[in-house]
Image 1: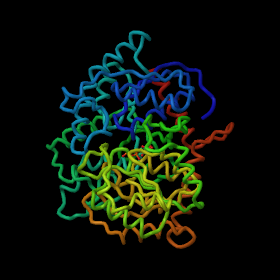
Image 2: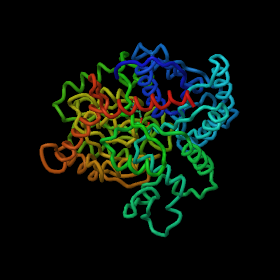
Image 3: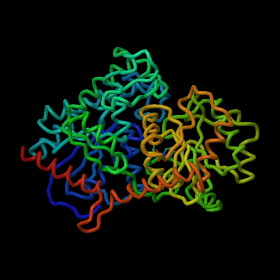
Image 4: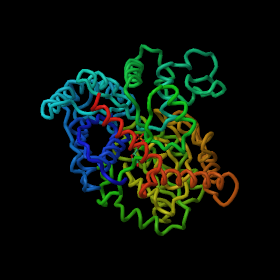
Length: 494
Ligand code: UDP
């Protein structure tokens, strides 16, 4: 994005400590940095600072005014394993501990803001905090500054998520289908779209005790930033604005610049394959012929589902790249064992060059940008959704946690760019289901597959145009970011 403004001031940013949050926070920091002279400090725990350092050094060099500040964090004292500060190494049932532990950052954040206030003679212009870290609004308030909540998700998924937690609507009806406050009256969700933690929540459990108060605090902030684009989510944005009664700035798609490092990617993570080897493999395939499979940075499917997916892939005969991790219930970062796949599967597909198994972490952005990619089996984390749609790649949804199932509902019902293969880790999925869905979505010459491809390509145009700036001509996200900057600068005058 284009010309820089001359005003000065300081913005502090506090992300939740998961890659799907750190990456868009850094991307937002870069956007603000490119448009202003403002100093930006991203404050997080020491190990996450290391990721951010690595992510910054493996990509854009021009980040002079983006500072990283360590907030001390003692994982063992907070009931977490040693050196655990990010969701990536935590099995799902323990993630709630990290959420609760994030509240301990309040004291070091207060010290940081106090230090900035003393050095600069006034508090930062605002503190931009993750929607999950509602407690930051108390810090902002006590320094007489403003708090902006940043949702790294889309508008529709965010609204469904915050309203579900705030209202627990599924607990108030006997039916499996229910209405969610904030959505039109005739609109229903199904309990199977809820992760077990919220399905069983009653307002007093450990998940409710974190999410309900944190979301309530974020809803009282001065405004929200959403990693989406005005044109792709008209319904979600209208409903979210109506629900929050706050300004919502749409600044998406917030994506990191391509990596300059062949083995480390934008998240500062070591890839299971070199970028060159991956691209060489993709180059050997026909245009729009390859299926990409990945379940994000912190989710995996069950062992039986993994087996069915592998068998379905074999039957479909489509070339594929699969970022693979040990199944649900095992250490996701541990060694992958052959027994989790059909006998001889890896050897067979490697020899026939039919498939590429990438262990642990793949260069997703670069894979999705390759012309050989036809479709993406995804858990539908919002970053993955934006990365796929930015390339016009239709999505086969397999939501596993968080707001992912709500994202899929929107992708299927509102955007028409997806089919949902199954939901969660407990569902029974057969190789026939897998093959059928792959065939429909990857047949892009006709029928449903063509419709989805056309719609995905259309969304890609909106995503591209939103961040274009040519002289007076500005895309919607550029205008929105301009408006956000103007608004926070006006805070100074308050
Ligand atoms: N990612 C990646 N390689 C992987 C897995 C994930 O580059 O093997 C990146 C992906 O490109 C995206 C982020 O990690 O930017 C995952 O975010 P998302 O919101 O899709 O899912 P989450 O991990 O938060 O569930």
